[in-house]
Image (tube, rainbow, N blue to C red):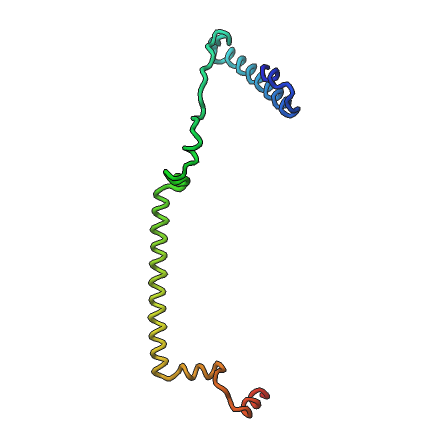
Length: 146
């Protein structure tokens, strides 16, 4: 009722929403009054006898320089719980350790393989198979013909 008075010049959608809300509130009030008269039988004080509701601050105002100052603390520190951050850190360390261990095993196996191939003179044979070794021209033409 008072909202319609203060909403003069407001968009039609807002006025329509206010009207629907007012109808809904009046229907709920009628239903509640009937239920109270039939079931609960409680005395309902008149609205004029009730004291006005005290003002309540829903937000705490802050100085913007304090809000925007990122030097004091990490801005997003409260987004991830500390226990989750610690668990992630332990997981990362564990993964790094596994990767390091596997890399060391690979390095050792590669070194061992290189030594054994040298003992058998196989690196030169492998290079020859890969094409680094040149065949005589006549043999090469015969191979290509086949």
